[in-house]
Length: 93
Image (tube, rainbow, N blue to C red; front, top):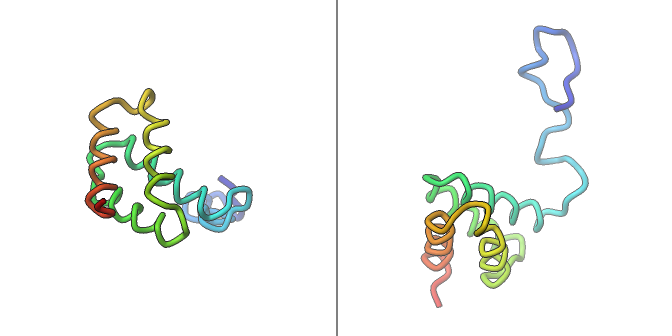
């Protein structure tokens, strides 16, 4: 985190904000967000919102499924199934 200013406001001011940082394009950033929320578990409402967000930035269902499937060894079977279920609910066949 980049903090500027006095010691008092270091915890309330972050610059640059996370959503404007450079290095990742919007499609990649949104796909990573989907994967991280899926890995957390218990955040299915947010996962569904980010499935929609992925669609809005141009990521298709196949890309989202590939990313979640890639994360399977790290986040476990139940969370992978939950994430795939959210994708399938928002984007039915």
